[in-house]
Length: 158
Image (tube, rainbow, N blue to C red):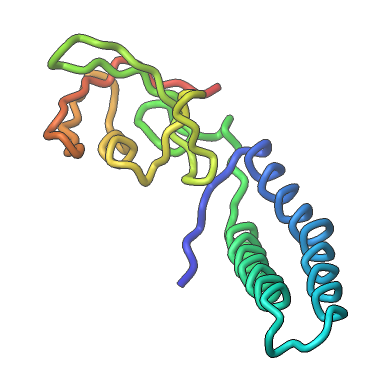
């Protein structure tokens, strides 16, 4: 059973562009490398040929996984999302109850996650812990170094 993931228009375009690059640029390069190695003689003792075949296999596996992700991707109309609770593509302002630190994160699909840009995956411990919460509620989230309690201060859509 394949897992459906939800993407913004920008995130889905980025995925499709990467898939097109792998198919249109990297796949022909891999085929060319195999052809060049094959031309060098005896295939039974040709390490360059074996390496090129291995690289091609890895590339085909990556292309296959990307095709599966794209086929199971769904585009989200963010204007239709409920802002009363935390959902995928919510921008959430939270406060760490232990030290008072405030942070703002956008919950996104795993492949769009980028902590530097303030985007965390809904599959991460914090993302899972925040889903479904409303403003004013607290979320106790198990992280690698213990349990952290966050208060939901604000929920919005960009």
